[in-house]
Image 1 (cartoon, rainbow, N blue to C red):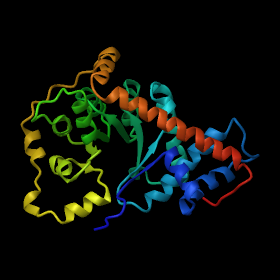
Image 2 (tube, one colour; image 1 turned 30 degrees about the vertical axis):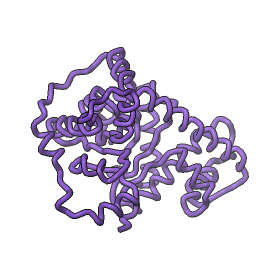
Image 3 (cartoon, rainbow, N blue to C red; image 1 turned 90 degrees about the vertical axis):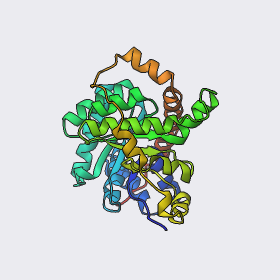
Image 4 (cartoon, rainbow, N blue to C red; image 1 turned 90 degrees about the horizontal axis):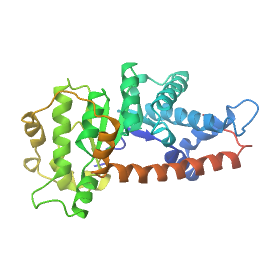
Length: 297
């Protein structure tokens, strides 16, 4: 059963893959390069990257049923003002291409500054996708900030705790985080949708069926297609209904960072930051090396 992509994420890594592999998506970068009057230089290369992201988001918005999430740039993760400013600039580029706003999300990592930027942007009607959520404090803060989508990581979270030898035999922190986040989102009115990623196998998927969105690979989809319906349920929904949800309360930055340090969040954010910084650098190198190129996007 091939369902095809239902949504998409636009990032420097994805753009880099598109230009290396060729095909229509490469036009997003080529078109951005060709759109700069007077040619490329050190001052406008960042704009070319932003324009390429907007181009690809526009292209994909017509191809998927769901939304396209646009990464803003990992150098902004600890600067709420810069993150907010970049999202508004990216939204303007997407508006220029007549990309429907209801097809867009802006992907922001769940740092303390990222949560504050999300709060401001959602108040302005800009939909945000908060990623790299690994602990209850991050999830609560993102939901309380009004994030449109909050992304959790089931198998990765469980693997981290297992590596620390801090789990008893029946513990399932990935499930508990998803359940509690779903409960809080429902209690807040249901605007925030809970996305669960890092689902390593069918059993992991079964555990969180009932969450709003699941990121599932084709291999697991094929296995699920052969799973009897009687083996599938949505117990997370009934379990979430019994969770006591506290009132919204903002943590100060020190307490928030401490919660991240006590979970996989700080480590995973650092890994992602380095990976995405490398992709950003490689994409900029590609753009600088192909200044004479052009495109049609």
